[in-house]
Structures are given as structure tokens and as C-alpha cells.
Amino acid sequence: MSAPEPGRGRVVLAGTPIGNPDDAPPRLVTALRTADVIAAEDTRRLRRLCAALGVELTARVVSSHEHNEDSRGEDLVAAAAAGATVLVVTDAGMPTVSDPGYRVVVAAAAAGVPVTTVPGPSAVLAALAVSGLATDRFCFEGFLPRKAGERASALAELARERRTMVFFEAPHRLAASLEAMAQALGADRRAAVCRELTKTHEEVRRGTLTELAQWTSGLAKIGEVTLVVAGAPATAADPARALEEVLARVAAGERLKDAAAEVARATGASKRELYEAALSARR
Image (cartoon, rainbow, N blue to C red; front, side, top):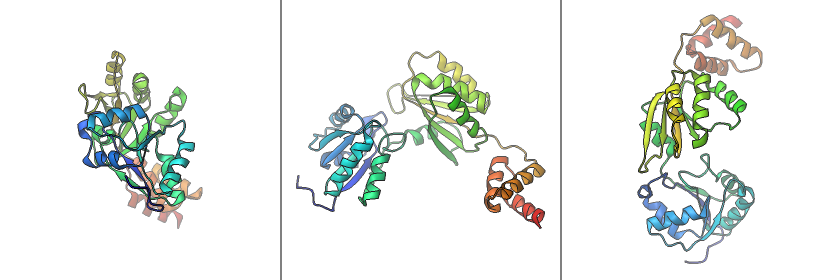
């Protein structure tokens, strides 16, 4: 391997398989073989992945996880600034997506160090695709708060979200999260629990939040989990109340266009009609 050339280094975010090593793209194999430095969330898992892919590591391997990413990120960016190719990988999926890597990207951007990606498998998109729920508009909400009160508050804010929602959840908190969702979003809200995606014991269970909570509570071992939850159903908007809310937002300093758009999204009312009604009311 030739010596790194100053000014030619970069940080590479590489997606890794979410379960099945055969899903590794060819570019990941090349990146693992040619990197100067590899920052891994768990170095043991990295070595197991490389063994499965037939990759002999020649790079310097360091750990980079949630507990040391701030300090480690400075070293990684310094190495890239000096000319090294720094490969960042996590245990599964794409770095920075509810995984380490974000701070490294921020530090690299601040230092003017190029950042690029080797795209790979995504648990978010895989779960969304097999959920049987609407895929035209969706949002990713990551992990819910661990504390019950904070979790309930977060879900209350999402109760009127119209887009399909995707969450990650730890196996031991899954039942509690499904029960909290049923209370905040509605017992009959449709959802899908996707576990062990791409692995031998992959399973997708669809049903209402209440049904899924009851099913999950009886499982001894659940495996890696991605939750997909249907968005709030459209409801008939009360034109007078919707207009009243738009005018209140405008009076508080919000732009009319933005207020109309937000109220329309939340209530299902027509954004154009709300905007025009608000204009008339202000004349």
C-alpha cells in the first residue's frame, strides 16, 4: 500500500449488511481491502464480517462508538486530512442512521475533509418495503425515549402524523413501546414488527398495535427489531377551526403561507383554501 498523500484523504461512510453477509456490495469489499484506517463500532464484528467476505485486513482498525466518538472523531479527521482513506462502519446498516458516525461527518465537514459513501443495506427501507403499509410518504423516528414519560410525550407529538413512521427498538423494550403506541396513536392503528431482517429467522408480523403488543409479550427472544406504523388517518377538517388556528399562528408571528401549510397537513384541510380564507379574513 502506498503512503497516503496529504490533501487527498477522505472519510468514507460504508453501509454493512443488516444480517446476511451476502448482501455486502462489491464496493464494500474493495473499501475494506484498500482503506488506510477503519473505524468500527465493534471491531470484533468487523473482523467476523471480513472473515465471511474473505477480506484480509491491512488497515489500522480502531473502535469508534457512542462513548468515544467525540475524541476519536478528531483523530480520524486528522488522519484523513493527512491523506488517509478513513472507512467508517457500524455493526449493521449505514453509519450516522441511529448509529455512530455523525460526529465524524460534522468534524470532517468543519475541517474541509471530503466525505463520501459506499451505500449498503438499510433496515429502514427493508422494513418499510415488506410492512404492507403506505410507502409513498414516510418518516424515520429512530429510537423512542427509554423513560415512559418521555416516550409518551414523543408519541403524543406523532399522534397526528400522516406519514408512515419507521422506528428502531431494543428487543427488551418492544412490548412496552407497542403498548405506549396503542395508547397514544390508537389501539386499532395498523403496524408491522419486522425482526431479524435478512437472517435465517426473519419474521414480519402485521396487525393492530394492540394485537402486536399482545403477540410480543409472549416471545422469549425477539431479535433485532424495526417497527413500521401507519400514519394517522385523514379526518374531516372543521373549516372554521382550521382557519382560526391559521389566524392565531399568524398573529403569533408565523408566515401565513407556512401557517396554512402546517394546519392543512395536520387537519387534512386544503392548503389553498385555508390560505385564501385567511387572506380574506385579514382584509
